[in-house]
Length: 157
Image 1 (cartoon, rainbow, N blue to C red):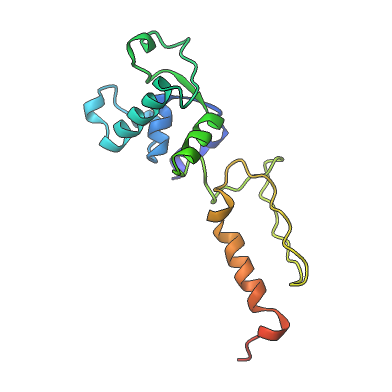
Image 2: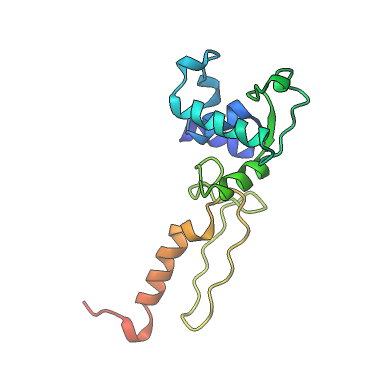
């Protein structure tokens, strides 16, 4: 998904952009004719539009002249509201929850710290671009390695 990775720095999207990114497509490649776009994108766009209409997700419709007739493609939604909506629906689109690009507050990849088995694991830093902790495969893998290397469990080859 290298073509959409720069979108992780954007905090406000149109519904149309968010739907494309949700499906892993670059928004610049969308057709202005809905019938030419993938059905997945249209379904996500409908889901987001319905969430705006039912007030499940806040949106700025002031710049969208067609919002009064229910067309929310150009309405603006924030990354935070999209994340909250996705969590509510138990959905984790990669452009909102990407473990391959774990940036901390300073914009650098955090270093992995090894701790002895007797100490509790440190809390991971808040990760704006990462999946929820239950989907953190790196942490899971490190925990398995840590447990396998405890003194009573070392394997001899």
